[in-house]
Amino acid sequence: MLLPIPDVLTAAQVEEARRILAAAEWLDGRVTAGHQSARVKNNTQLPEGSEAARRVGEMILAALGQNPLFITAALPLRVFPPLFNRYQGGESFGTHVDNAIRQVTGTAHRMRTDLSATLFLTGPSEYEGGELVVEDTYGAHNVKLPAGHMILYPASSLHHVRPVTRGARIASFFWIQSMVRDDSQRSILFDLDVAIQAINRDHAEHSSAVQLTGVYHNLLRRWAES
Image (cartoon, one colour):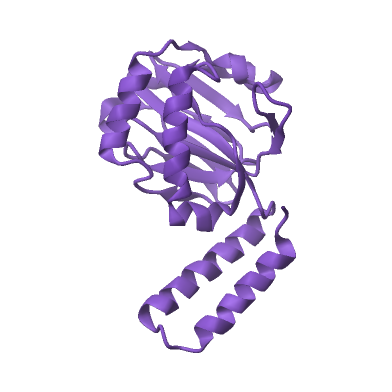
């Protein structure tokens, strides 16, 4: 499931995040790449654990915790501390797949990466190129969203970032371990939850709402891990 999530951050939060990131030190992005990814990765990145990454990351995590669409779609169990990258001057990231397991820097904790997320911090008019291209069974999908918006997609997807030929593309990226690891099962639960919300909104007294809610939770009970 490839899902845009609008307005994760407000305009004021985006402005504050960019102010913090503008004053930070950026390093070669290959420091966090796996062996395969390092050969095709060409960008700069905020050091993991830096003060700037921590401050903006906490802002993003707090916003995600209050975002119903994200919670419904991802069913998050764990969220990797947000990372930050920048593309400019022709930089790009060739086709790759994200590592299945990530270790949280400075801890012994490892997590499975079921979903990948990119949260855009610069708007489409601020740079040329830089599209995130995600491949699935239906083809390649170009993603370039407004600042503050996020794209959520299976971490198993092949994807790449096209060269940025003007301006700078700044984004946060991170991974989610879902309570439901299978993407098709998450998609079923997402569609069912959206339908239940529509029934509750438009036909609140209809008895089907309770029955469908029961089906949703029984499926979640069957498929969820903790």
